[in-house]
Image (cartoon, rainbow, N blue to C red):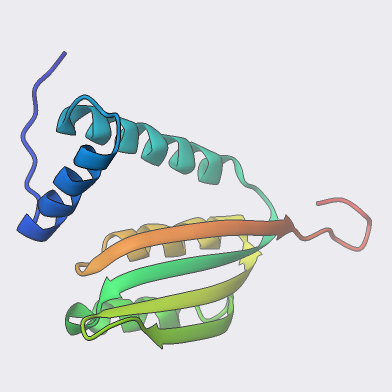
Length: 138
């Protein structure tokens, strides 16, 4: 097994340690291995989606760090974002939900772009369906 080093903000490490005290994980390393497996599984499932889709993308981020990159990305993907909800969760955190309808390739590009933005804490997507064309196929 290879040993790697990662950097975590103090607050995140503190939360991880609290969870470790409540769960049956053997170590921080095991929790991180599980998280990496889940990430890979979600990535692979997104990779397999093809065609025209309807989905939601939920983004949790630090509002002090929302900048031009996030706004630019949302405008760049205006062709597939059909609805947008913004909510203040607390003094420092915002939640945004985007309803997306369009080509799966564009959905993947939007999600990848959001993942690359500093201050984004969490991204979840839910595939609501694959849009069928008029001939009855996907």
